Amino acid sequence: MGVIGKLEVEVDIKSSGDVFHELFKTNPNHVCNIVPDQIHACDVHEGEFGQIGSIIQWDYTFDGKKCLTKEVIEAIDEEKKMVKFRVIEGDLLTDYKNMSIAVHVIPKGDIDAVLWEIEFERFDDYGPYPTKFMDFLIALTRDVEAHHLNA
Image (cartoon, rainbow, N blue to C red):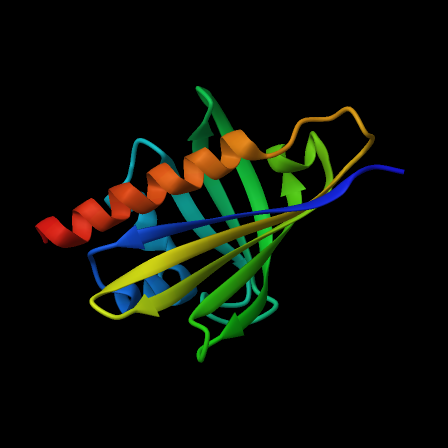
């Protein structure tokens, strides 16, 4: 049996959390316009953006390698400003039996925070933790924030 785990990181942002939530909920295909060096494409394969059960594919560069991942939109919570994706195919499942990624926006008075959660199950006790992928999500957050602050 593998290791089941969860990583969380909260990133304070100066840009609007509402814009960030809408981007990942209904317009994830716009992320590739904001950070084309990291995210090359985001296409819907089944359903529609912003609908639970829809399947989307991300083409991206991670750790110097071109990758792709298909995810199903598992949950959307407007009150918590949360979108949760479950990975169903692709490079992220090379090292993990299963993985889900959630992005929340947390109002904190004058600023907002973006909370990323990665839940994962490794194939065995010796596989890697997804810390590099979490670093990727933090960098993505900073680049999206910079884009919105400069817009």
